[in-house]
Image 1: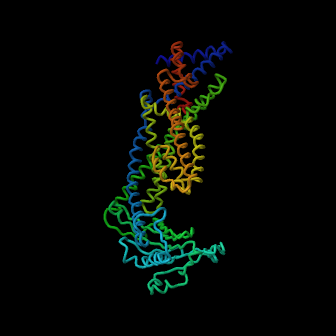
Image 2: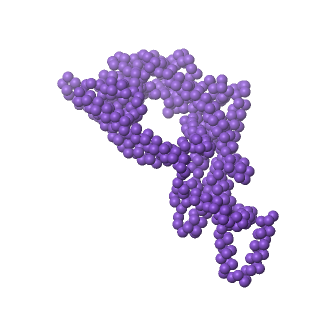
Image 3: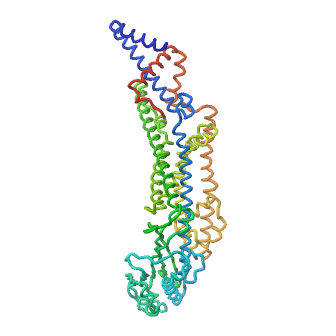
Amino acid sequence: MARGVEALDLQVWSRASGPSRGPQCRDAMAHLDSEVTEECLREDLKFYFMNPCEKFRARQQIPWKMGLQILKIVMVTTQLVRFGLSNQLVVAFKEENTVAFKHLFLRGYSGVDEDEYSCSVYTQEDTYESIFFAISQFHQLRNLSLGTLGYGENEDNRIGLKVCKQHYKKGTMFPSNETLNIDSDIEIDCIHLDLQTLSKNPQDWKNSSFFRLAFYRLLQVEISFHLKGIDLQTIHSRELPDCYIFQNTIIFDNKAHSGKIKIYFDSDANIEECKDLNISGSIQRNTQYVLVFDAFVIVICLASLILCTRSIVLGLRLRKRFLNFFLEKYKRCVCNADQWEFINRWYILVIISDLMSIIGSILKMEIKAKNLTNYDLCSILLGTSTLFVWVGVIRYLGYFQAYNVLILTMQASLPKVLRFCACAGMIYLGYTFCGWIVLGPYHDKFENLNTVAECLFSLVNGDDMYATFAHIQQKSLLVWLFSRLYLYSFISLFIYMILSLFIAIITDSYDTIKKYQQNGFPVTDLQEFLKECGSKEKCQKESSAFLSCICCLRRNGSDDHLMLIN
C-alpha cells in the first residue's frame, strides 16, 4: 500500500513539475526508467537460471516439466520393456527357423557353421548330392518339417525352386601342361523346378543337361526358394500372430577353384500382414489396451516437447534482451560462453528424445495393428529415445553438488578429449591399414578392415592378447618378425602412453572442477551482472523498493511477453 502511494506521489510530482523542470527532469526520469528496465531484466535472469525447487520457493510455481519428465521415464521404459519382450519372440522365431532350414536343406550339416559359411564339399559327387538333396528336401517339406511352413511364391509369382549357375563363357584348361584358354565373360543359366516337375521321376530332372557342371568353368550354383510360416508363440503372450515369408538362398561358391566349394545358406525373413485371422479369446482386447497405452505415451511426449520448446524460445528472447541491454549500457558484446548459457542443452536432448519416442510409438502401434512390420527401425527409435531419457536424469542429479562434479567434469574435458581422440585416431587408422595389408593373409583377425579395427580395440583394453600373438601363421619368418614389432609397438604406444594421457586429461579437468568448487568459479559478465543487485540494495534501499513496485506494475501491463518462465 505504501509503495502504491509512493508511485502515485511520483506521478503527481512528475506531472506538476514537468513544465518547470525541463531537461533536468527528463534526464532524471530517463535514468529512473533505465534502472527499472535493468532491475526487471535482472530479476527475470535470476528466475530463469533457478532450478525447479528454487522456482517453487520463489514464486510457488509447480515444476510441471520435472514431474512430466519423471512420468515420462516410467512410461517410456515400460513401453520399451514390453516391446523388447515382443521383439525377442520375433528374433527367436527367425533364428530358430534359420537353424531348422540349415538342417533340412544342407546335406551333412553338423549344427555349427564352419566359418562365415555353413559347410563345404570337396568332391564332384558330394557337390551333386548336396544340390539334389536340397531340391528333394524342398519337395518333401510338408512331410519333413515340424514347423508351420508352406510354399511361397517367388519373384516370378511361381511356386517352386529356382536354380541358377554362373560359369565362364567357354574355355579349356590343362594344368599338367600349364596351359589355360578361357573367356572371362560370365554366363548365367537358370532353371525353374515347380512342384509338378518335382513330383515326376527324379531321374528326369537330375539327368537334365543343366546339371552337367563343368567345374573348371563353374563359379557358383544358387538355389533360391520362398517359404511361408506363421508364428503362433505370440498367442501365448496375448498378441496377434505374425505371418512370415522366408526368402532362402543356398549358394555353392567355387570362385576360388581351390578344390573346396563353400556352401552358404541365407534366410531373409519378412513379416507380412496375415490376410485372414480368426482368433477367439481375449487377444483382441489386450491389443486395444496396448494401443491405448502407446497413445498415452505419445501424449506425454508431445506435452514434454511443447514445454521444452517453449522454454528454449523464451530463453532466446531473454538472451536477446540481455545482449541489447549489455551493448547499450556497457558498449561491448557479451562473450560466447555467456550467450550459450541461455540455450539449455538438456532441453535439446529432451526434444530429440520426445521426437524419437513419438515416431517410435506410432510405428509400434502400426506394428501392433499388423499394418507395418519394420521392427528394426522401431527398435532403434525407442531404444535411443529411452537412452536419452535416462541420460537426462543426470540434469536433476546435477542440482546436488556431490553429483554435479560428474557433469561439470564431462563438460570441461569433452573438447580436450575430442581433440585428443582426433589425433590418436590418425595413429589408430595407420595401424589398422598396416595390419590389414601385412598380416591379413596370415591371421584370421586381420582378414578385413572391420576385424582389424575390432582386434586392435580389444588389445587396447587388454583383451585376447595371447591369442592374437599365438595365432599368427609362421609360414614367413619376415612376416612373423614384423607381427611382433607391430603388436608390441601398438600395445606399448596405446596402453602406456595414449591411454594414460587420455586418463590424465579427464583427471586434470576433475581437479580443476574441485578447485573451483573450493575457491569459487571464474565470474563471467552474466554472473557479475546478477551480483550487482546485492550492492545496489544496500546503497539504494528506498529506490530499490520503489523500482520493485514499478517492475511489478509493468509486468502486469503490456510487457507480459517479456516475462520468462523456464
